[in-house]
Image (tube, rainbow, N blue to C red; front, side, top):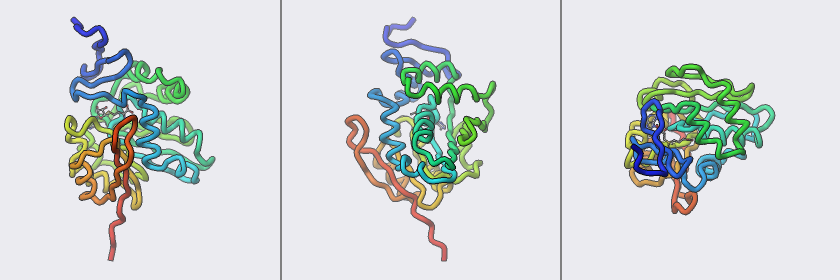
Amino acid sequence: MNENPKTTNIDTPSDELEWREGDMPYSTGFGDYYYSKSDGRLECDHVFIDGNALKNRFTHAGRIVIGELGFGTGLNFLETLRQFNEFAHEDAQLEFHSFEINPLAPSVIKKALTVWPELTQELDLMLASWPNALTQDNELNIDDRVKLHLHIGDVNERLPKQFFQADAWYLDGFAPARNESMWSLELMQEIANHTKDHGTFSSYTAAGWVRRNLIEAGFEVRKTNGYAGKRDMICGVKIPTEVD
Ligand SMILES: C[S@@+](CC[C@H](N)C(=O)[O-])C[C@H]1O[C@@H](n2cnc3c(N)ncnc32)[C@H](O)[C@@H]1O
């Protein structure tokens, strides 16, 4: 029996998702929310889109490749898609790679994201191209300019098998203390291996050991103001490797 009237258990593949305060997805496995309780869409705009200066980068022709740790509900992808459609050059393309160990069912994604009417069109587009059954590597053709690559499984195992080079990364695992394998030095090195020279990253966390791992992996790391009362977040650039 559910003792907490504000909390409803629902059946997800891992059975580890609860709805808190009505429409906030919360992982009982990791003990964390999927996004800011304040406003996940505005958090994405501040931390990931502005943290990687994407509004400006979208205005250039050509392909922009974005990688993400933790697809979750797809909120970051959909807000990125919305802003890409708003700002992008007519000859720009978006290739978005996201990694997820515990994919949520489309009905769960829909329940989480219908609170943002701004994303209705993007959500419908994504769900219309959602595969009947997910495999390890899924390619969703959102429209003729945008592709979503959804890589299912532990990112530590899936990322080394990929060949893309990202222009920008969204580091969006659960809180570092509760999801250590999403922030390890080995994974940050793998992120660096999959980032173009001068490519960027951003994250909502400014945890000291995460910063140190990113620096050791070859990124220049900068602290900046966090979203909704959080003092700090981080963003940075991959320092090009010198060749003699
Ligand atoms: C903070 S949530 C991401 C929220 C998401 N970006 C969104 O827009 O809803 C973190 C996500 O990372 C996933 N995750 C945790 N550990 C992982 C791992 N080792 N490999 C891949 N995904 C992982 C979780 O299942 C969860 O969906």
